[in-house]
Image 1: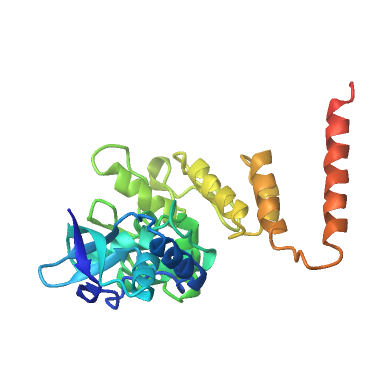
Image 2: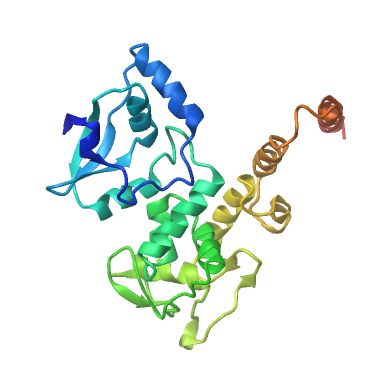
Length: 279
């Protein structure tokens, strides 16, 4: 339900701000657009019967406050502060002011602080990040995996559970296996898969899922892009995306910037000539 809320009705201090920091540039840009009459989508707030917890739209809220607006249009949903936080952790994954890598890591940290006993896959789904990123953040925080973890179905499972035949509850079991990297073969013996620094080839087809996550992390520079050479399913587009993201970090003010671009153009031209040459 959309309704206009007074700015002082909206709770922005309930711990539902999951970014490392808001962007003053974005706030200023939104404020100028609001003053010129541009209509923005409503912010999203969760109402628990007494408080409106802001879950999405902090930049819009701050922009409205900056130009001394009294109210803001909000999509109000029923729910607690926890509901608002769960929504906030995955907000802006595909729209708005896009999250930085630091924002993604911060979302993982908050989720792990709130729900330590939840599985990595469950938290990754909430935060809209890869399972591998959650695993790395958990390790960096010094949080060992608990003996029991809660899956997406809300049930508890041993953190290192043996492979079971697909059937009722199998999805939840598979989810836990992807985290532990363990699987059981015939007779219940554990079969080691193809070990790698960041992903594991296990029985039952989880390898492709983990390789996909690893490729995504290489593209986003959350993992050393040179690791693409060790991933059998890596595509040329994975390399180009990683290269572009890496090159975006070049200093354009450096006098050698144009020289670097010329070198890249020459390299690309050589590759195209070689491909066009008759065999």
